[in-house]
Image (tube, rainbow over all chains, first blue to last red; front, side, top):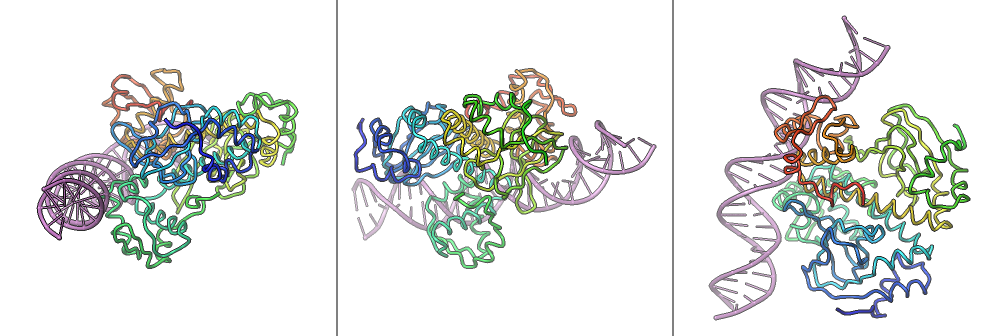
Length: 236
Length: 236
DNA sequence: CGTCCTTTTGAACATTGTCAAACACTGTGG
DNA sequence: CCACAGTGTTTGACAATGTTCAAAAGGACG
């Protein structure tokens, strides 16, 4: 196992909200115990239930968070660079609630959870950043729950497309960033159901070819989807 | 509007993990700007989307957190004494994502969110407690999402009963703490469906009469429900 | 006792999931 | 280059699950 964090990775990590405001001294203290590893695609990084020894940061590639029960599995989120995951488990020193696997070749930084907790106690800026980030994560999951409980699968898909479009700065055409199979699981449905949902959205001006999406009638789609700031805004 | 926090309420609040470790000085500073109010049942305390001016604490009674979209409504959680709610919104100074209403006659403490943020920055113990509490809340919502996505409504009900039983220290008989209508919404189903689900659970040794539950065959129920520490443990 | 609300029940319906098969796409090895 | 395997996607028929609507039954409370 490769030990030590290459300094070339410092700027990416320092750029995260989480680490931006803390003192150099404390940042370096965190980096000292950390290391970086490259993983091929489809490698399981974390198994739910394991002790949370490290805070993870995706530097490049992408990582899927998923959960299992009774031989069923569901996708909880996809993490893209540069961001952390399983912060809550690190903070609480509790077992991971989700598993994680790489989707592509990925570069992952690992910061010992106990260092995170130690620096939290002595660096007020870092503490502030952690609590802000955690509150953000919490709010994301709450929004996701509202999406799941208040909307049908068709409505979830329509709103997902609108959110994705926003991420692409409002372009009327874009590519899905993940496999449809995975999207289906994330949206809480089967691949077959997703396929039919895409078909149903044709009548609201959605054109699909492979993973390329065209929104032909923005107004019509929004009228159907009824996006809400309190569910679909990925900031705040 | 009644202003000022009666000192008789201090011990209850001080007893919360959130406020237990902080300095007296900072605790009193928080209390100075806070106040307490009594509400009748079915009063809406918070409307989702409103600015989060106060951190709320249920001192007695109970409060339902719920969300709406497109004329649909779903119950997100029930808050019982003594605990806080909408901490994340206070921390981030962002709009509430959930509405809140009293279920019964309730006594609620209100602490200005900006005071919470201010004391967070100067009291490391309070900061630590907030981040621990937030991580806890986050993990609860993640567990809830897993429950929703990985289980059928029948399985959710069975596991809910087992969790409730644990809260009652493992007693084989107990009362449901909320109306069935509300429970149905919390579990993500209709009241009609819940009623049928209770009937289906008869064959696993559940007896229901009004809101009184008897678990006649613990083993059989657990065999069906397959409770998991990573979904059903309400601590950690 | 009557009123209001919740809960239950039944029947029809809608939505979503399952299974099997066909199809499309990708990359491999001959 | 093509045949092929492997995987993801789509389709169709069907089953399971969950919802809707209407009505009846039960409880709480004045």
